[in-house]
Length: 202
Ligand code: GTP
Ligand code: MG
Image (cartoon, rainbow, N blue to C red; front, side, top):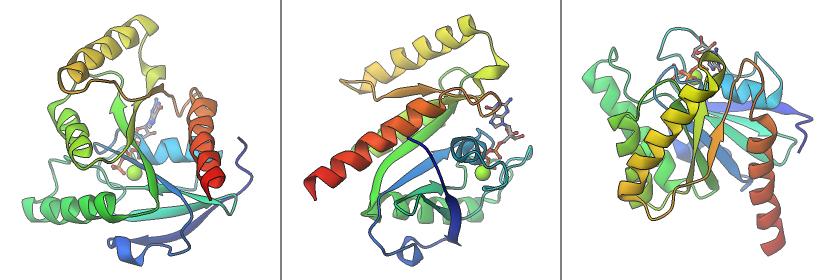
C-alpha cells in the first residue's frame, strides 16, 4: 500500500472529540521515547508529521492523522514516563485507556517495544491489559538499526518466551527501524489487509 497523503486532523485528550466520520484507525502506543511518533513519520514518509524528540514525554495528546482520506494513524502519548508527576500520569492513563476501550473505529493497536531491551514488565502488563479488554494488538519492535541481528533474534526469543506464559497464540510481530525504513511495507500491508476486510463486510 502506498501513502499518497497524510494530514494532521486533530489533537485532544478526549476520544469523544476525535473524528466522527467512522473511518478505521490504527493507534501506536508504548513507553515514552520508544519511537511511536518516528514510526508514524517513517510510515507516511513525512519526517515532520508527528513531533519527535530525544527527550521522553514529547507526545501528550491523542493525535489523529488522516491517510489517503480513508483511514487514520493515531499517535498516542507514551506510558510509564517516570518524570511526569503521579497526578499527571494518572490523568494520562485514564484518557488513553478510555480511548483504547471506547473508540469504536479503533481496528488495531501497535504496541511498540524497544528491540534493545529485555521484556519489560510495564509492556507485558499493558499487553495483558489489552487482552483482558479484547483490544486487538500487534507487537512492533523499534530501533533495530541500533543492534545486531543476533541480539535482535535473542531479544525476540525472550519476548516470545514471556508472551507464551500468558497467551495461547503470540500476536503478529513486526521489526522496524525509523532510521532505515525497515518494516514499512509489512506494517502498511497489515493495515491494508484490515482495511480491505472491513470494506468486504460493508
Ligand atoms: P513520546 O512521544 O515521548 O512518548 O516518544 P515517542 O515514542 O513518540 O518517540 P519518538 O518518535 O519521539 O522518538 C524518540 C527518540 O528515538 C528520538 O530521538 C528518535 O529520533 C529516536 N528513534 C525513534 N525511532 C528510531 C529508530 O528506529 N532508530 C533510531 N536509531 N532512533 C530512533
Ligand atoms: Mg511521540
